[in-house]
Structures are given as structure tokens and as C-alpha cells.
Length: 85
Image (cartoon, rainbow, N blue to C red; front, top):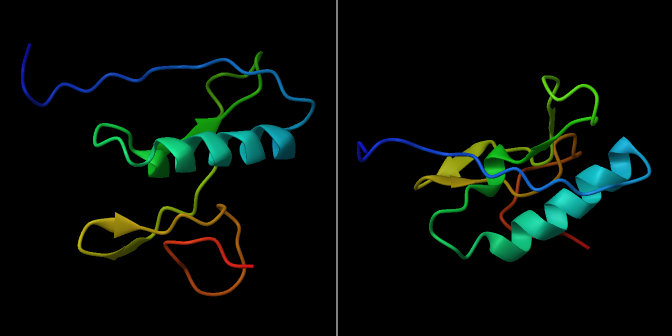
């Protein structure tokens, strides 16, 4: 196995709607971001019967030093590494 190979772990979770699925994915992503092999910026959700269509969960803009914005994908205002109240 080459050092650069990456694998994607899919974790099916049922949600009532797209917004609910994105919220849940953000919570899971933020809680796992401390693990070095988890890339929360790449988290997406899809409808069960449209798994080729992915909806971003996080903004994912680069903020410098390899860090990314952790606000929702369609947030208003400036990017941030932390939730704003």
C-alpha cells in the first residue's frame, strides 16, 4: 500500500431532511477533528438514492497554515475556526 493512498469511511445516518443531515455531520466532524487522520473540511452528505450528488457541510476555505474554516458551507460573514454565537 502506498503512503499516499486515502480511503473514505462512509457512515450512514438517517436524517429527516438535508439541513438536519448537514447539522448532524457538522457536529460529528467538529467532535472528530482532533484526530489527525480526520479531515472535517471534506465532509459531505447525500440523499440515500442520490449518493453521487454530495452536499458540502463545512465552508472549507483555507485560512492559512493549512487550517480551514469550520463554519457551515453557506455561512454569512467572515470565515472562522470556531463557532460564533
